[in-house]
Image (tube, rainbow, N blue to C red):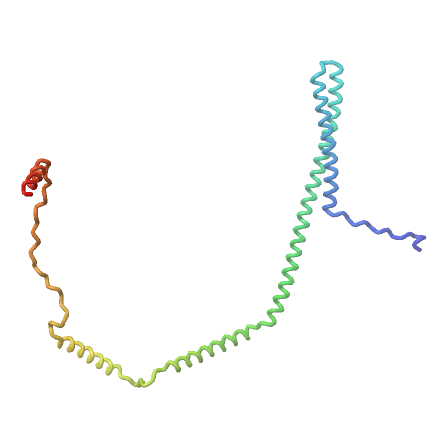
Amino acid sequence: MKKIFGAKKSKDPAPTIQDATNQINKRGESVDEKIRKLDEELARYKEQIRRTRPGPSQEAIKARAIRLLKHKRMYEEQRNMLYNQTYNLDQVGFAADGLKDAQQTMNAMKAANKELKGMMKTVKIEDIDNMQDEMTDLMDVSNEIQESLGRSYNIPDDVDEEELMGELDGLEADMEFESAAVPSYLQPDEEPDLNLPTAPTYPTAVPMNRHQGDELEVFSSLRS
């Protein structure tokens, strides 16, 4: 049957955006090379026109230069068209990449949501509330145990507050009596203010001049 009807040919995969961009870039490079060669020829014609005198020869060179200039403009239009196509492909590629990133983000969020749902099944609010109540009861029992262990002994529970205040007043009276019984010479007092005369002042020594110094030396030599 395959020999009669022929086997179905496998279709080539559709070109990707990157493939199309690469193909257009190759065409653009080819056009750029043609424009570069035309610029070189136009530069030579320009030099020839400058060196040739006005006349038929110069007009012929100008005609060839104008023809090449028209070809250059045609290639420049093609290059601009290729640049526009590349720009459009880049925009489509950016949009496609953005959609892929969004799809990956959505898949990641779905997986995280599924995982959270599974974790929520193992954690119940009722269990947390019961645990908190148990912790509160345990803390109360611990405080009671600490209070019981820290209880003081030999202290009556029915102590009269007025009786304690009376005993405190008696202690203050005893302290005042003891301070009054101490002799005055044993009690600390302030230092007396002694009215002593001021020290006498003496005149300051006057320096001797040279003549007085010579006389003092002579007097000392005579005594010796």
